Amino acid sequence: MKKVNVGDMVTRRSYGQDIVFYVRRILGTDPPVAQLIGVNVRLFADSPLDDLVVLDYRIKPSSPSGLKSAISQIVLQRAKPDSQQHYRLEVVRSDYVPVPGKVLHVDGEEHYLNQCLALYRNLNVPVIGLHIPEVEQPKRIREVLEKYQPDILVITGHDGLLRRSGSRDFLANYRSSQYFVETVRQARLYDSNRDGLAIIAGACQSHFESLIEAGANFASAPERVMIHCYDPVFVAEKLAYTPFTQVVNLPELFGTTISGKDGIGGIETRGKLRQGFPRIESWLPSESYTLPKT
Image 1 (cartoon, rainbow, N blue to C red):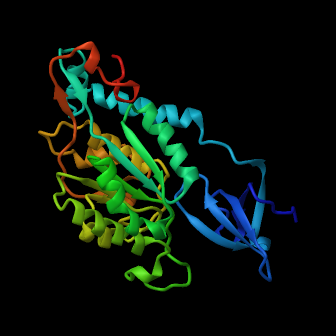
Image 2: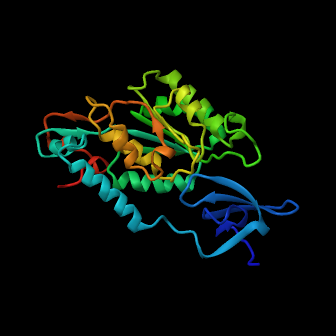
Image 3: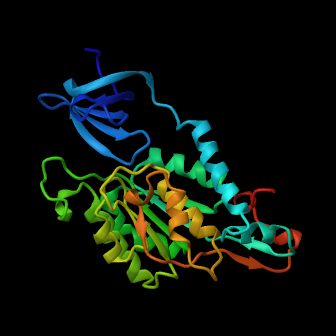
């Protein structure tokens, strides 16, 4: 059996090698246990070393071609005349300045955060990213909301239904859902209006119903499936660039995510895009606000 090292890409035999992880650390227990982070899914797991299969490559960024394909689909969707997003392209051709919603992305995993920030930049979404471990998020969320005053809040990180925990109905049976739920509650003490502060919350297999009841507009995971690390970004992008006069088209929204309606669900929510006037050089958006050229 090939030796397992920190940074290796691995799969788990007991789960049919269904998900690729990288090894974050190896605990000196008896027997030794590896702490694993999903490469593209927001999952944290522990595994005995003898259950791991080491792959023949080291950790790499997500596929550039796959990312370009996802971005291209979103840009094409924006250009459709019958799409809500067509509004934003018309704004570019006029004397108005597009002002999309600002995102505060709070992530329990720095590796995922960095990937997501790169995607926000590619999608021209204004964003502030913070790495805050899940257990600390409820204690710090009010402070960062008051500091950055976003239009859209993303609360995410690692989660998962514990394998030997039994029922999926109880929060205690999840790795991080209880922290996400409490973070949403604290955020709603800051702004109780779901059309004021739009909240996207959860990670892999998170307790969807509790997150929505706590005040999230969108959450994972209705069918307790794994979600892709980019899924919260795609939801935030749709909110940021849907006009504030319109309600986000839910089927269209979930069609842009990788995990679909099994992974992300939510309620009707107004968009965050506004337009300013007049369009003068000193008020043109920075690169992070610039819309794709048609």
